[in-house]
Image (tube, rainbow, N blue to C red; front, side, top):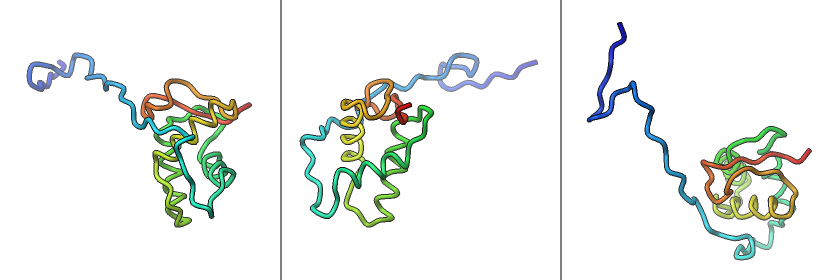
Length: 112
């Protein structure tokens, strides 16, 4: 016999609540000003290193890239990395699925 657990007026037998996709950042690459010591190519290397040929959640790629930037002592935050990912997708340099402004509800991968 299956035991049912209740949360308020919802039982565990029902489908779980779905997370509503929200925009994580609206920053556009054109609005970003990088420190003089960091180039777009430098940033692209960090982002590409966090990606694979398989689709990965945008949030995970950004999180891994943020950690690498911290290790290097770069003053680069998640919003900047998200804006750069968007620019790379718009330039057709990476593949993407979904609205990249919604990090938890979109995915990215390397081309090819």
